[in-house]
Amino acid sequence: MNKLTEDILKGAEANKSQQKKKRTTAQLPIYRDASNLLYIIMRVMYHAPRKMTKALDEAIVCGTELCRSLALANEVRGMERAAALNIALANAYTLSTIIGSLAYLDVISKSVSKDLRKKINKIVAQGIGWRESATQQGQHNKQTKSNN
Image (cartoon, rainbow, N blue to C red; front, side):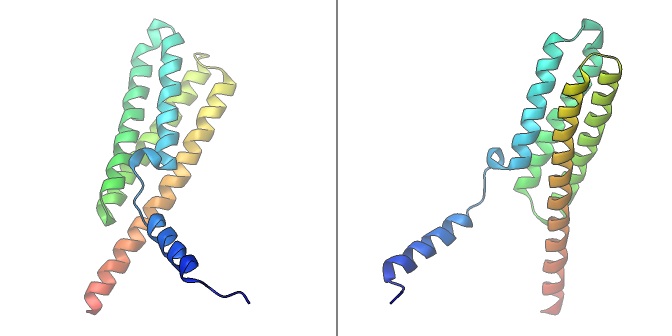
């Protein structure tokens, strides 16, 4: 009774091919989180006292480098991807430190600090998972080549 028709099979094949399409950098959840984090830091900078400009400038640089590294990681494969993700993770950790200092100095509220740190922790978790996936793929490719 439940027979697969050719239309159903063609639709399934079309769905498979669509799922394999590479996501653009802006579509990656980790990149969206990083760009949202950068936006929030820019909003904080807009309202912060002038004497905090240097620290907030550094936060913007780290946020920008985080986004740049994630975009690069989306473009390369294997160990190059892992290296780009390592840079992104280092920038995320640095941002976390800067945000903690800003909260301690009452430049940002504790609740904003908590929200930003949640975003950073989410970015770090995604970055570590992506890096592990990239290094395992690289090892798998090397093993396959050496077996051939």
